[in-house]
Image (cartoon, one colour):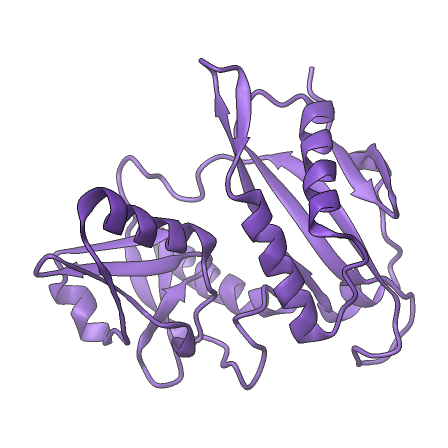
Length: 254
């Protein structure tokens, strides 16, 4: 039987014991950065395979630097802790691992400096984000992607995901599966939680980070596979909204 564990306040504990106070700064102001590491269960091997774990922690460190947060743990140590949490939790299904660096001080006041930070990691069962067997019905959201001069999308900041939640709820409440979000210039940015690619005339195209795109780890893997396995180079350039309607294919990664 599976029992979820977490790394919290310097210890591995049962997930139910990992609690923060209501005055925690990150809870009140969204002052945290996080990652989402997929664990894919392989029944034949009897094993969970973690997808590019080190790269996720490297991006977590990058996000922390952008917000000026102290990560307080080395990446090798975080990888070891993650493997231990996975093994102790005992899941035999696909999972999602959430590491987070957050401002843990219990104090009111909007700022990032002069506060304590901490790191936590937890695990939970998590299947496909979208139904990959039938495809997704998408619409272009009325909400625009947050700009790098507002909250940097290059950092995976918890507070920025209100922008994503607005787009996702708008899509689902209007009968769609997912939103495609444009940036302030009207160019395609990404989905509510995915990078986006189009295929036109045999070319694979994806927006650049300068279009307020999170530098996706899964997206980078797709670019590598397209080049190494299929001999297709990916073009990184701005995508107009109208190109979505004439593309041969549109797909998302995340």
